[in-house]
Length: 76
Image (cartoon, rainbow, N blue to C red):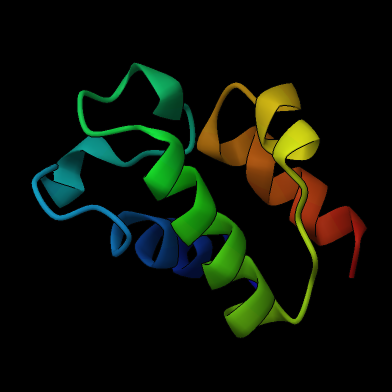
């Protein structure tokens, strides 16, 4: 698992946001398209792609995509 693949998988959960917006330091909750449905999609993506259960509390604890990646990596 690497950060670039994680960012690409993360970005695929969004329909209207340009891929160029997704960087390690992106504060994902500041994205216009971010909402609770996207959060659920991220939880599903992490489960499907990485076989890791991510909680809503863990998403809330993360500020950037990199933070979220670290949480997922630490569960591996």
